[in-house]
Image 1 (cartoon, helix red, strand yellow):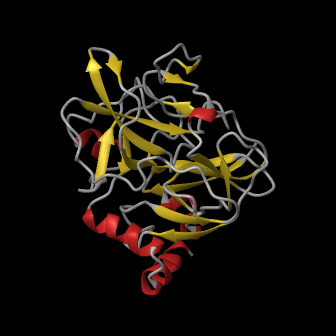
Image 2 (cartoon, helix red, strand yellow):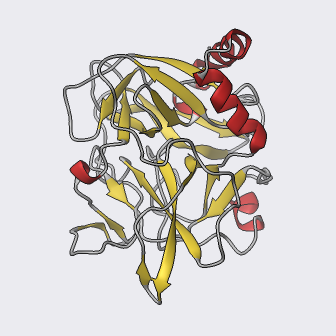
Length: 286
């Protein structure tokens, strides 16, 4: 049985990733929205679906070389850069992912250089839990919308769905059913050891639909309810999975890292190669 290394604040596991130190994994699943056509169910507890990986070539797995087991997810925002959660790659919290694998491939392992948000606080409330990965090798297939849209820029008729590789089916891409924003952030605050939801974070999901263990870093998209019960495909990228249920049984609202103006500027500065920002971001990842 695998030994697990998990990030804790007090007695509560806050991060959606518990990282294996050795041994085998229990099968994992992921999060996901309404399917336009018949799609086989992954797990009815989360109302997730199993989409065709070929339809989501911009979604990637983060793995540890030598095991190949998914530890986190991510999304390619251009041909070189992947967006994920900082705790997946930050050594200070046990982040051990060191390879990127594009969706639809099991052997195309890419190395990367990681840059963690300069406002990430691994020893505190884990706000700004986001990182950029500069991926080696041939160009990635990027999400058509590029960089994320600002947090809270969606309309009243919109909800969310997320994608990931987590429990209960390890390595299978999953897509959540539409998730509504939580009526109050207190549902996330009370769930995660009293941690306040930051201005650039999103509290969404429920016991019926939410990401789970090993879904960290996976993308969060908006979707629109065009008719009652009928939802559009993904519209805008607005966040990544940060904190979710650790046991995949007592599921509930999750916290997603979103993007304010300062966060979007950080994304631009790192990708533009600004030395000071890159050096500071590399240091946070160590």
